[in-house]
Length: 281
Ligand code: KMH
Ligand code: ZN
Image 1: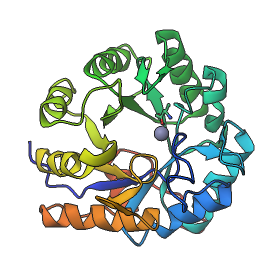
Image 2: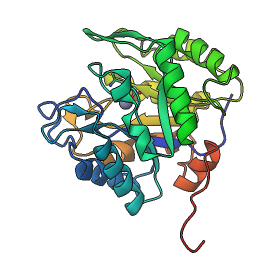
Image 3: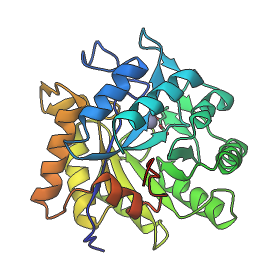
């Protein structure tokens, strides 16, 4: 299903796993994370996927860091703010929920568990229900972060039963060691499991990222994701100098394949998120 709509470019500036030893430009503080996201606006990003860290780079669940990051992004742009409730493999589900306090435009929700490299990344059904209920209470729309086909099935069931409020939004994450692979067959299997009217973004980890994003664009993905959370390289052997450089490359890729790049306003419409209420408008 070809998608003639502009593509939403998502930037994930820091994540929880990458280190400054791997990527010297990795942002740590709320100011650094927000500044890095803001640099990506002119490059073509319309949505920022937020994790926060301690100043020394340790993954953090401090709600004040989420609040400061969201506030800074909103002060400087119309970017859609999305907080992770995946956090890091070390965090309890309670810690993973703290980003919701910032009342972002969107939050992720995990709908299953997997091996995550050498670690376990556990999200029980009860955990998902907790995230779904708290997001509903806070009025924060959700996107399912799915790492395998079973997670898609579980998310669909939770959407149908109302535990995850609609409309259906998915981020298909390919290539986590322990999750589904970054292959055309894997992407096809994930897409086939989606509801017909779903919005879906492609995220791919590591060296197969570019071709999987390209394939997603050709198959009609709503969005593609780049940023240091997923890949620190611009191309083989060349570290990216910034998240913005990765967004520029993603936008070039989209345009080269016949997809326009969504503005923040278009992205809100595509993802069925409320338009921004600006003072005086
Ligand atoms: N850091 C991973 C364990 C998400 O943001 O929803 C979880 C993650 C997924 O990054
Ligand atoms: Zn994440």
